[in-house]
Image (cartoon, rainbow over all chains, first blue to last red; front, side, top):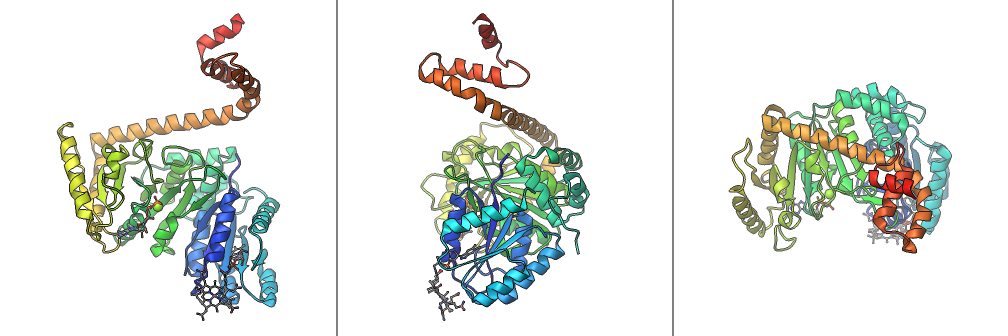
Length: 135
Length: 339
Ligand code: B12
Ligand SMILES: Nc1nc2c(ncn2[C@@H]2O[C@H](COP(=O)(O)OP(=O)(O)OP(=O)(O)O)[C@@H](O)[C@H]2O)c(=O)[nH]1
Ligand SMILES: [Mg+2]
């Protein structure tokens, strides 16, 4: 049976910009994915706990507040500690190029910033999940 | 550090880790149940045999009546009393794309990192009755993982397609003020399925009207049924002020006793088993039919379009040709020979 791709979209910290993440949520839903949105103001711990319980294929973090370099290390630490190593982590929002490069080295698979067409996000997630293979 | 749960982990190998309560193992097991993979069947069989301790509480009510918020508050209360709570929250899939935005969880975020609360969102994926196909497997998995109360939140139901009552020990029907003049449960025909009635949002001034209306409706119905082990209470709650939550938890605990210790409860459990068996058989049937039907249907649809035969006969023919195990319908089997 074909199961829809499961995605968690997360907003972390004080960042209140949720327009983009809602656009992404709708695009993914319309592409046939199951989307779980955490709502605003979650902690990295809350996000990872939820992502593990939901066993999402992709954890997508939306950040427009500039705190990416403190948030992602926490997320990867927790994922590893819980044994959820095969979760695909991606990021979106607004951030400088050098941060994006550093995050990629840390394990963030793709970073999709302003003006990324929703269809491109859909295609990227489908590709990442296909590359990983079934669970 | 926990050993990774990867796609290389066999479902059987996950069973003990589920029983030990490892979140990632529980999560993956539920995913495999959802995907319906045959690899998981033996593991799910073992889980089923070990399950049966948890109190299964179903919560239903029209969209927006406050179910998710209430489930979050209930979980908090049950935690305070030392219980562990598993939650299966079901939302509808879009009939157009097949995708879903699963929004129940947002309303339950107060206990977001408490290991004694496990929340799993599920999409209906075309299943009717307000339930997802793997919801009951998920309940078993959470049960074996040590969650002693498992709450199922159905999609906001409309008409009488409410399967929750046939799957849970205790069914709570939530009505809310401000969603129309009539008690929604009456309109939806689900008044009778409640073991406990909740009128939510009692912080609102119009809630009292809803409470009174509902109680009156129930009084009218009461004369029809004889005395039982259980009097269905009507409880006003507010997830904002906390009103009624303790009373609701107490009612749930009392009904747990009915479900597990009385003759009424035993009958209910047997009915649940019947339902489960039938539902599983239905799903198996659909699964087995799936591809075969897809292949056999094209020429039959063609004949239907030409009005060569009627839908009923052709549907029978379709089943006869595509179901393993031969014709299910004797008469049409004979008519096939005759042709
Ligand atoms: C609209 C806006 C606001 C609105 C937000 C409304 C809302 N509910 O979202 C309001 C006015 C409230 C606001 C407030 C603030 N803002 Co403002 N805001 C913007 C603005 C102009 C546009 C953001 C937007 O909505 N874009 C449209 C959406 C569709 O795009 P998007 O969010 O980028 O999303 C796309 C991609 O990034 C990607 N994406 C997004 N999330 C995800 C997630 C995943 C998983 C994936 C794959 C992709 C993805 O997909 C989307 C589609 O392409 C940006 C400037 C800019 N050009 O980005 C500043 C901006 C983000 N804000 C900024 C600031 C500083 C603030 C304030 C602190 C200002 C202040 N001093 O009060 C406050 C903070 C509020 C808070 N609590 O967070 C700065 C952030 C600087 C930084 N990060 O270092 C920016 C960049 C402006 C600037 N150049 O200085 N803001
Ligand atoms: N005033 C008041 N509002 C409430 C209460 N409980 C929930 N709400 C609000 O009612 C709306 C719906 O709440 P949910 O908990 O999402 O309702 P639901 O029944 O789970 O909704 P669906 O899952 O979409 O069917 C939200 O805006 C809540 O904030 C309450 O006790 N009082
Ligand atoms: Mg809900």
